[in-house]
Image 1 (cartoon, rainbow, N blue to C red):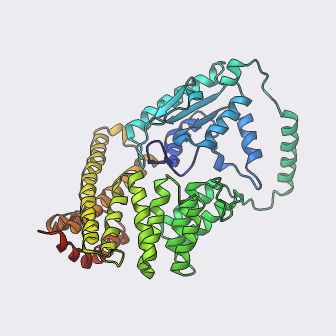
Image 2: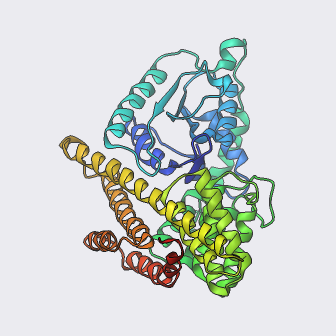
Image 3: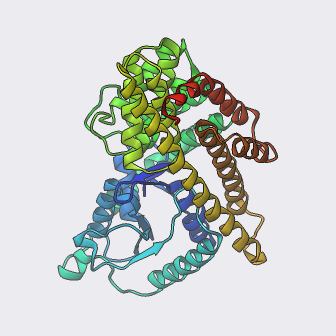
Length: 448
């Protein structure tokens, strides 16, 4: 399966595949007395290919999560089907359109909400997956279409693998007194995420850069073979680190995104991040080419993924442009101001809808005491929901301020202030409002 946050291009949504693995898959496998390993958790010092293929051949059970139509997962599923006649389980997020060649394969679906997974869905899918694992391990039925339609003998590398394992064992015994410090891709990305959570952006940059280097990544690799999640996280931590200076960090971050074919990509996460970088660059140097670039990226992001983040930032940048020399007439300024106002009204609608979805889910879950377990899932999901509710209020406040709805703005700010949050989260909103204040005066142009 993929790891990190991936874009499902069929729907434009972002899916946190680490949550799928950590909450839906791994606990079930380990409850069966099996050792669970994802590809990014395999220790290796060279290319990942050899240990990955070995695992696909030797594993007692393989689960392939095809969510977001991940090409690596699809290829690895094909390899497993060619190597083993049975004990392969295919799962995916339920909105994935299945390719033709998979239509006749049993695919166990789960529901992913994007950044969240519902409590009841965790309980339901864990039960279904557990029963499926029991079934495939006990029944000798063939589940590979390759072995279903062709009379093949499964390959074996037993002699070679045994020899390699003996050599590894000898090497381990001769170095028993030496400390083992094997870095895995999973460990490096986890350390990077932890550094981001603590706002240690320089450290996060180091960890994510090391993770990319494990895949022999080089800047300028525009062939599409890099991991977009790692590039996004490295670009974010790079521009946030402001090292060696802010403008250099912004330029370095943008160069990273260009490796994801920035000018043509349909990934809303990539273009939204580029919009944020160009926005900050414009605020540092006031170069109008940065202003234009930021607007174009946020426009693409908003059309690709119609969400409040892209909408509120696009409205803000249109207000910037209305005050700049890029608007050469009163009519151009009015056009930008009208568009910004309409975007803010759309954002308010999105805020209300998303608030209702989250609070409705919270209320439903609170009624089912058996689902509220003191585990990683309940804690992380409640934390994520609280953070999303806070940002909804912040976006609501900014949208109302931009529309001149003072009472609604003050109400949203007061409500957000009562919620648990980091100080920087409220400060970022206040900074945005201070930047908006002089620009809002231009709205007099469109008032009757």
